[in-house]
Length: 329
View 1: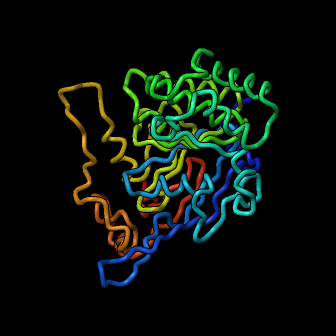
View 2: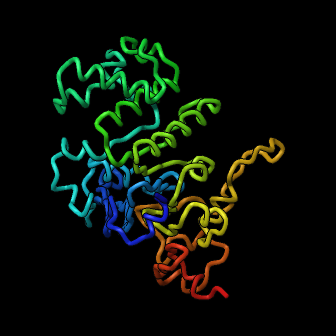
View 3: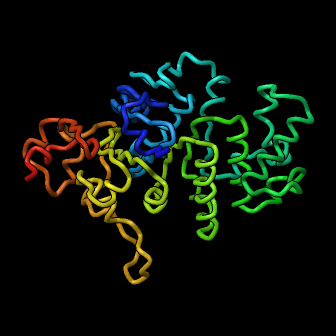
């Protein structure tokens, strides 16, 4: 079955965000007033079974806050997050963790150094009381084998493993409860380049074998292009463009997406390290610009961009939040 076609076929989303906002109270100096920082501002997203939805944007755009809400670590300030049509805020954390798991950026800091690999991978089974000692050990070894960890590592400790092996441990632990959704937060950025492709290929194989759905957060556009079926581009807490991965990389429609793609590192060492050529730095989230939040950095900004928030355009190519679509030929 074509999973990507399923995502556009009108079926009920596996995961859905409706007008999700997350605010934080921030003190402005020792005697200053408390200000509200909106890290995520009215986000609408849907993720269908089998999708790999990638969230991309500069540091501070709201990706990690959004991921923490999807995992249930943070509740939304406004809006709701639905899993199979039901609000996840109404589900106990233990029940939610059976369906939604996460793989984090640094495999070493996310693993208890005092526990053996077998104990780490089997912990979710023991917490949820999924069988006796013998069956838990058998299932743990099966999952270790599935992610490419030999049985001899069962009694080893994290510091005896390489970075790539530790990330395989984290993946095995996330998958042992057979979740439907896995949040992958920069799953390869802490690894050597030579190991990154191995972990990406593993995640791709596991998605196919276990019919998993991924929400992938990454700064690495090469990783996103390799894995994503859908890409959502975040800027200052908003989704400014969402499209199928192939379409977004070949024909970006938002100026910010275009700037991000032009900053991708190329294999030519003579070109140096690229920068996002957007003039001024990322705006202050405590005091976002009026109108379109991107207009101070946009070379194509119109007069109305400074005054009026852009409409959200939904069409066959995806979703874009930009005034320029109104004047496109």
